[in-house]
Length: 241
Image (cartoon, rainbow, N blue to C red; front, side, top):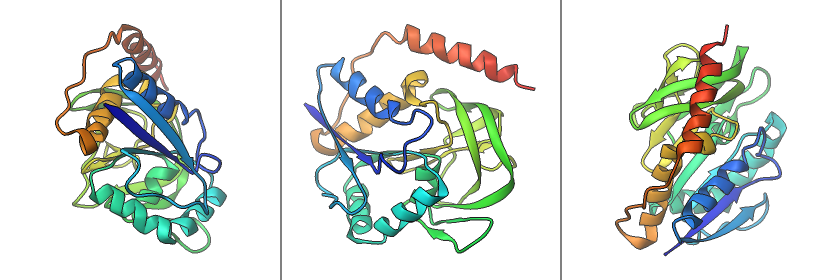
């Protein structure tokens, strides 16, 4: 059994340790004896919709999002939609999360169109959300670091990934953090998010492996160190003013 991971636009959309998510996914697969191949996709290159089982789309600045949005309006956008329709999974963080949605509307200038693969819309807010983020999800605690001024609102086809305990999450209003739609996940948790949230990494691995290998049940790993890091980070978040 093998796993194929595509890192989308790593030169433009990869801040606050986001690449660590790709490293975590690959390592957790290899610990289980699963072969892993990773590829980067840069703007202007051709995306093969049949290759990857799992896509990672990190965060970036507005300038980078402009470039990526234009690339997603090319044949690459249709190829990515085709990949998702055929069962590929995705983890998107911050700017990547916003660009999988319908659009990002900045404080000034025209809106930045997204892929429309997730039923979410983001608008620039007046207050920037910065700090440790702690949320409760059905499968476990979610911990990360948020740094964004985009306020994201979920449409009826998307459901929240988690409920905010400490921090702001999607918009600082409705206590939602991130979104799940099919096998696509969006979150505002940087840090990177997966090393401290092994349940989320394994959920994505199962979804990705099922694309080509059918039903998959992962062997359990010793996550004592990961969970200790999660508890420590949660304590720091709860102490947040």
